[in-house]
Image 1 (cartoon, helix red, strand yellow):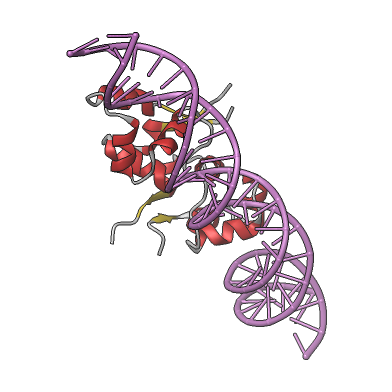
Image 2: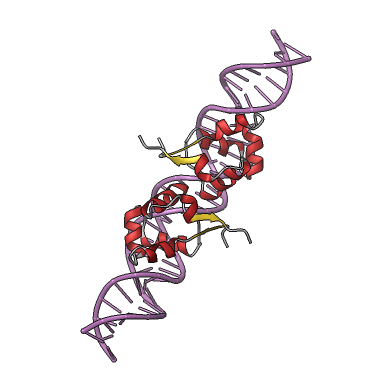
Length: 69
Length: 69
DNA sequence: AACCAATGTTAAAGATATTTGACATTGGCA
DNA sequence: TGCCAATGTCAAATATCTTTAACATTGGTT
């Protein structure tokens, strides 16, 4: 498993059941990229991480963090 | 210019004049990678950004930020 | 049951990050 | 002056992220 965890899926749910596609459009990436990030198949670029956090009005470190364990 | 700025060079100076090579060793990347990040030739991966911040006991967002302008 | 939106998933191609090895430049110090 | 460490820089190779296109699965609704 990649060392970086996130709560993107939860944030989508909390924000009016936003879909992966809608979030991708707001961030400027595809829905497959959002899916891969949520499933931790890879961690996003720093730029994509900043943009995702901004959509939810959160700081990057509230959305992404190092997963100890 | 890339949209993400950082204060890595300043942090190295504040921490006993740490060299690019020493920081690279601590982070697990090469000195060329540190040089490229400082010069904003590209922005690091999210993982590399987290590791750099940790070396200086800083939060990622204290070391890297979106450069408005 | 049939339909439809959302999500899972994969392969191939493209873009970007990182490494490796090499050589140039600079500044301090013996 | 000559040496040496630190940094700048470049090209080629490798790794990782992202896109595009396609098809499968799931769950809800009519």
